[in-house]
Image (cartoon, rainbow, N blue to C red; front, side, top):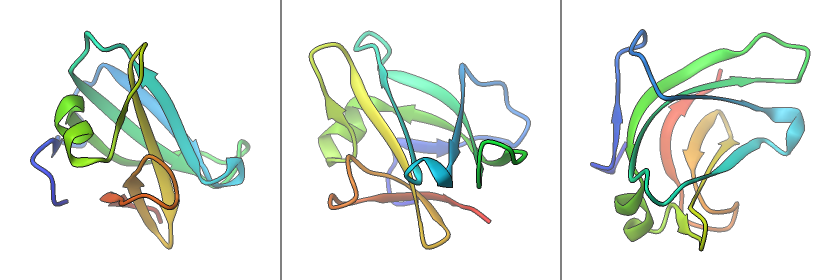
Length: 108
C-alpha cells in the first residue's frame, strides 16, 4: 500500500461496512459514500462468483477526501465514489480500469 489514506486494520476489527466483490460481475465492486462520511472503516471480501463463499481481502480505515486528492476516488454531488477492482491477483482502488490504481490486497 502506498497511501497514508488507507490503513489496514486487524483481521477481526469491527468495521462500519462490509463489501463483497466478485469476479463474474466485471471484477469490480463500487459504491457511493455520503460526503459527510469523510472517513470510513470497511471489510472487503471477494469471491469468484455469486455461488462461492467470500474470502476476506482485508479490513481498512479509509480517508475518502485524501484518496480523492490522490486521484483514486471521485467526488460526486451526492458522495464519494469508491471502487475496488481485481487485476492479476491484486485488489486495487481505482476510479476505472484505465485510471491509476492503489493496491490494497490480494485475491487469491
